[in-house]
Length: 188
Length: 180
Image (cartoon, rainbow over all chains, first blue to last red; front, side):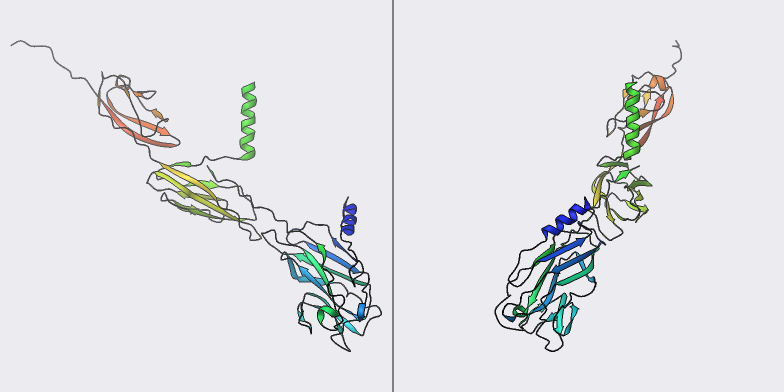
């Protein structure tokens, strides 16, 4: 049953192709819903990035609901850079790109030759990390979304493509909380 | 047999679900050491508040069970007992409250009786209780049954009691008629 649910979640998270983005897939384990203190593992793959009009990929930004403890993110490796530019991926909580885009948290590529160029890798890219559910009394938001940024959004290259690739939803849900059920007052 | 089974179920029910308290809870004036409690969650803490009725929390603050001394002014006190539970993770529950009625029993004053007076029906400010003592038959005081002397009559209701003294006087002893 658990396997079927995992496969179902996997299929549901398959996304249609966007302008520059190949297929995006993700898994989140264990399967939700989640309670305070739960640790989950997220795996995300972008099959390819099509460099329309020489737009290069720059970053993967995560959007976490308030129910996640963002400071507990523990990454496993980096997205990879097959055939890409010289540089490295950096997990950054905040960065302002040259075009003014306020980025973070997520992975961004630091091109050591030209910092605002991103990487000319076309993928695939794989991201894996764990994150912990906040200790909370309220059913806070646990959604996780990811946005892939290229030159168009960061301002590294102005050639009018790959500007509107939509956010990809990895998870939707809320923290499962246990209501406090104080009994009625009794008198001996 | 049917009665026995009913009693058995009632007993099991009380053991399983614990004592229940009517709301409002009735206590006697100046009652001391009255114990209130909720079902305990060992990892939780409990904040009790006593409001009105001259109530003073004596022991148990922070736990699921407290004792309270009540004052001497009768009346109904809404939300006199309040408890708020906090879990180990700091989550605060909704307040649970209990109304308290402080009860003072007052017997209607009675004068003294003669031994031959008829039985007198006693009454109190709150009906439904039980009279007891020498000369009490139901709710009546019968001087002939009580006999000459001062008798303590007790009235009980809902765990509260009050007493009064009733005197039965002897008949006059009249000597024989003399003729000068």
